[in-house]
Length: 220
Image 1 (cartoon, helix red, strand yellow):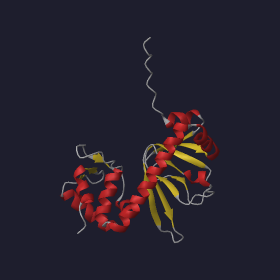
Image 2 (image 1 turned 90 degrees about the vertical axis):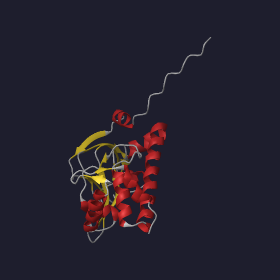
Image 3 (image 1 turned 180 degrees about the vertical axis):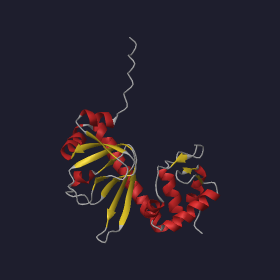
Image 4 (image 1 turned 30 degrees about the vertical axis):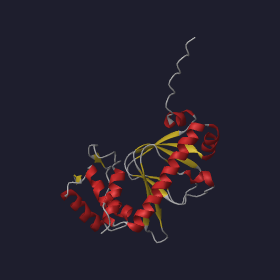
């Protein structure tokens, strides 16, 4: 007898699954604080749409950006490793929609749902790799190269043959915080990138794949 063909396996959809197990959907306007530094850490967030800035504020009030997240990423996961209070804050960069999962529920899902566990681990490891790359970038690369890399990342670079990608609305002050330089230097670099045809626009930035040449250039 001929073997029955296997039915294609449906792609795992974390958003649908989290909704089904009772994850709470919430929306935040641009600039809203999703959680603050020092808040009780008792839940994990899944970013459905929009963009989120992760930052830490020193005792002197100086803010440092430690992450920029896009749709499909988890954050606030420190509570799963025993973190009782938030060591940083999460702020909506534009209109944001998230699914909120209580700590105990998320722990149970990671134990019992292998596809969710695999996805979660992959997302967290990918973000850890980005953090390491950012540290190397900060230690060894120029401010101009760091800005080029940040723009490519924010624009979700997809290859040399891809059309220009749009960077979600972001201020020069925020770019300066990401890069670790001043707003005036960011302004100078952006003007240079425009003159060279690497980026287009002012309020909304469109990034061309040619900007990658700045990242790949050997140090002088």
